[in-house]
Each structure stands twice: as structure tokens, then as C-alpha cells.
Image 1: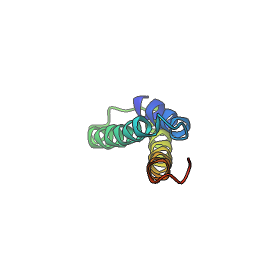
Image 2 (image 1 turned 90 degrees about the vertical axis):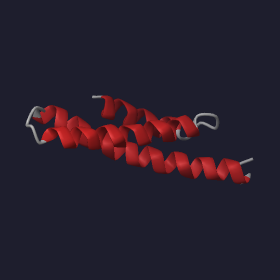
Image 3 (image 1 turned 120 degrees about the vertical axis):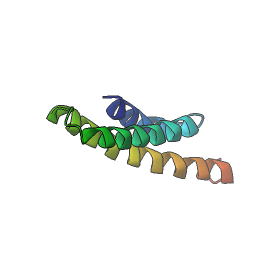
Length: 81
């Protein structure tokens, strides 16, 4: 569930000027948590709903991280001033 929340929240925060770096950090954390959960999945302790939420969170985290990084570069270079 943490992966889903961090991943989904990273997308809208990526488009706010002051929040694009925290959005990038949240997206990276969601990816790391997802990968840690996949390592634990080998034990067979996760439900199908939990795996589905993690997969959607991972996808959203990738989109949010890419958007946050792009927005940060645009703001830092002065293109969006």
C-alpha cells in the first residue's frame, strides 16, 4: 500500500514548482519499496490484491519520477520562468 500511495502522490506533486524534488524522492522511494517487496514475495506472504497495488504503485512511481525530474530540469534551467 505504501508503494501505491507514494507512487500516486508523486505524479501531481511533480507539477508543483516547489514540490518537484520531494515528488522525485517519493517516486524513488516507491520504486525501492516495490523492489524490496518483490524480494520478499518469494516467501509467498503477499496477497493478490497487495501485489496488484504494488504493481500500480510502481508504474505510477515511474511516471511521477520521470515527470518530476523533467520539471526540475525545466525549472532549474529557467525554461519555465
